[in-house]
Amino acid sequence: MNFQLSEPILIVGLGGVGTKLATKAKELLKTDCLLISNDQKDLDSDCKSIKISTQSVVNPSVQLIRGSAYADSENIKKEISKYSTVIILANLAGRAGTALAPVVSNLCKESNKNVLSFAIMPFKFEKDRIFQSGISLKRLREYSGCTIVLDNDALLDSNPDLSPIACHNISNEAIWNVIGSLATTSIPEDTNILSTGKDVQNVEDSLKDSLRMLYEDAPPSSVKRSILYILGGDNVPVGVLNSVTNITSSVFNQENTTVSQSISSGQKSKVIMLSSVQGETHFDKYDPLGIIPQEKTLDWEQPECSINCEFELYQLE
Ligand SMILES: Nc1nc2c(ncn2[C@@H]2O[C@H](COP(=O)(O)OP(=O)(O)OP(=O)(O)O)[C@@H](O)[C@H]2O)c(=O)[nH]1
Ligand SMILES: [Mg+2]
Image (cartoon, rainbow, N blue to C red; front, side, top):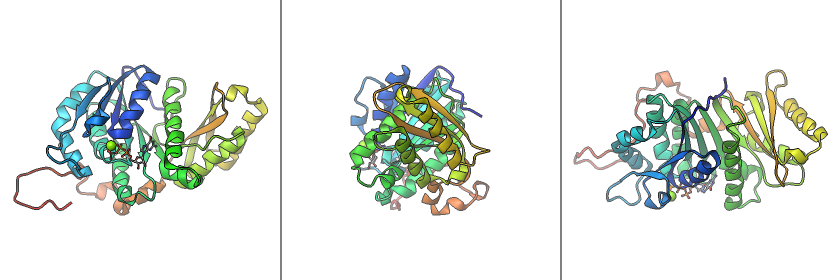
């Protein structure tokens, strides 16, 4: 089943990177935008915003930001109420995005919204973020009709020579490209992995980079459908376009995997790949207890959060 994008659409940016991506996405889709963060400097733009207050704490933990966000639940629900589809942009490599993604996506689901979410996952060397990002992603996937994951680590692993800034430029371009073509390309529900590579001379090499990045996150046998966004594709010989599709089909399980192309015009030629995956991904291992099936998890309803319950008890987190 494909994800249905119905108007009116609201873009919600969470945390520093989420709000940065959202302000650009808003222009691409010409929709309304809502920014949510605990950090005032993420909210300084002309979009509507909600500041999550952590009171006097200036370096709040993920759990404290999440706990504080519940105080704004009604406010968030009111803002999303007029819309049919909510597109959430969350940086699960940052504290605010990790904290807010489960809360905001759950509020959207409770209000019966169509939720499409984008999640950025951390680099492996950001060890303190891996665990939290894993649990946050699990909940975001649960509450979203469709989740698109961009793994910073997979991009760096397949291009170790790139600096983090160069990686961010490449990954943000891929995200904007998918957002920009949402109206013309239908994307599958469930979990999709976004993969790409650095700028190279030809489309076939760019495809190989995208495949390499995808392999870091999911086995090729788990890919059910793949969309190839071919930037500058209108200048590429049709024989090459054909071979790009053939290479992709031969890498995946040929009979069961559909490969489609979305060609756009532009100066450079490059491949960005969006692959719908079923079964386990690399991120399920970020939480060592993630192997426990959900029906056997007792405290699933409420995500971990820190609230001030006015007990004379030391906060353990
Ligand atoms: N894909 C992508 N990742 C980014 C970008 N900027 C930062 N990151 C990643 O996100 C992590 C957190 O970066 P911050 O700039 O602190 O992000 P933030 O959203 O403000 O996070 P908090 O302030 O912790 O809420 C970095 O270590 C990077 O791994 C970006 O533009 N694109
Ligand atoms: Mg920040």
